Amino acid sequence: MFGMDSAIMDPLNRDMLGGVYAAEALLGEDEYCIEYLSAYRDDLFGAVK
Image 1 (cartoon, one colour):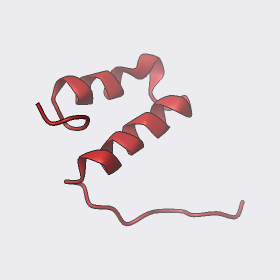
Image 2 (cartoon, helix red, strand yellow):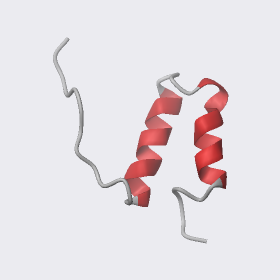
Image 3 (cartoon, helix red, strand yellow):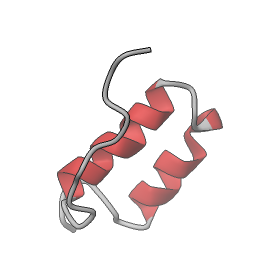
Image 4 (cartoon, helix red, strand yellow):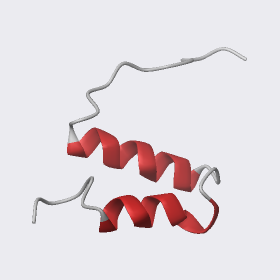
C-alpha cells in the first residue's frame, strides 16, 4: 500500500492531538471511543478551560 507511514507533529499542539484521537476513533481503532473520551476529560485537546 502506498501512502504516508508516519507524520511529524507537535505533541503539545492541542488541535493536532485532537485530530489524532478523532482519526483513531473514526477508523475504528478506538473501541467505543474510550481513549478519545478519556483524553477529552483529561483536557488534552479541545478548547482551553
